[in-house]
Image 1 (cartoon, rainbow, N blue to C red):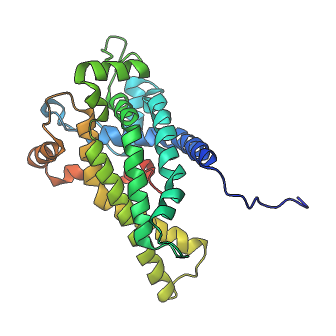
Image 2: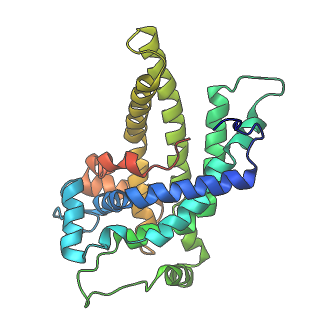
Image 3: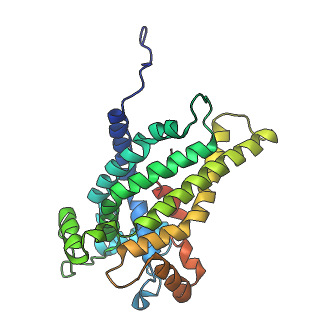
Length: 283
């Protein structure tokens, strides 16, 4: 409209927090069934009794869940998922500019890739620490299978899940898997930012594309694929460790060793095709 110009005043931290969390929640509503399917595929074959493949592929997993558990099953854990987005994305994105400015040398007008990686890893670690309880509860719900009225439900609701985990596993149980989650976030940040710049540079240097949307899209797609290849093993270990009952694994490293010895190295890439849909770490 005539006379209206974008505000030159940068948004406050509170506005960034609210905007990032709200946007992430809307995205989560659309992609949540894919995330649930990813969790089911990642934990499949974990127990010796359930080693036979129950789910096959993305669509097959979702259809199997709907057929055996009802149409609402792909949205199990949605409340905890939205809580996670409001806490994780708010901190991760809301503080990113401030932390990036903190790492940028005084008087410098250019933000290097190292600075962006440091800022992404720092805010990511802070966000994971804040949101870890919501992530644990979300994964517990997504991994639980209820095939009928007679099946046992460990948690009656989201708040009951928080209380039950804290009572049975201690308060530390709500932060189970924090280290592999932080590692996953750091790996994705490093892999995505570095490969994005490399791919974009090669596309421009060889005159394959110009510096516009198609170039950015191809670079982002390639960076996301590379990041998923590198981070998928950590993501599977993280999911299994967070979902495991007390005593099943001594540590994330023990979880990794058992996966290799019992299921082989391909177990690290279960749910691989769905990993890029469930990453919230992109800037």
